[in-house]
Length: 116
Image (cartoon, rainbow, N blue to C red):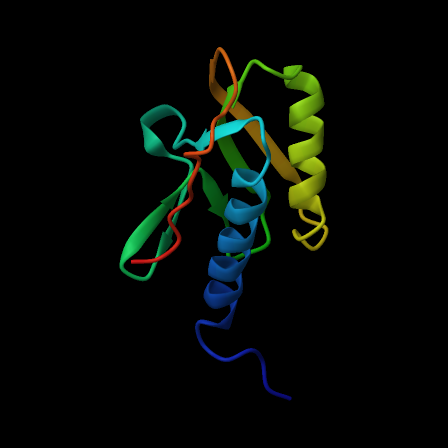
C-alpha cells in the first residue's frame, strides 16, 4: 500500500488556502484579509505568502483574519464567514479573527492575491 505522494498534503493545504481566501474575500462585509498580529495568519505558497488565511498541512484548524466593514453586525458576519469556510474545510475546525473594523461599506476594491 502506498501513501500520498511527497508534498501532496502541502499541495492540498495550499489549494484549500486559496479556496478559503476567495470565499472569504467575496463576502460583502470583508474589507480585506489581514495577517493578524505580527502577520502570523498566512499560508506560504510557492513564491509568495497568502495573508489572512492559515491552513496547516497536518489537518489543524483553518484560521482566517479579516478587516470588516461595520455596515453589518460583526457576530452575524463572523458566523457567515465560518459557514463559508466550513463548507470547503473538510471537517476542520474554523477560527475567524476580526483584526479591525472600518466604518462604511467594504467597497468594490476588495481583492485577494493568490498568484505569484
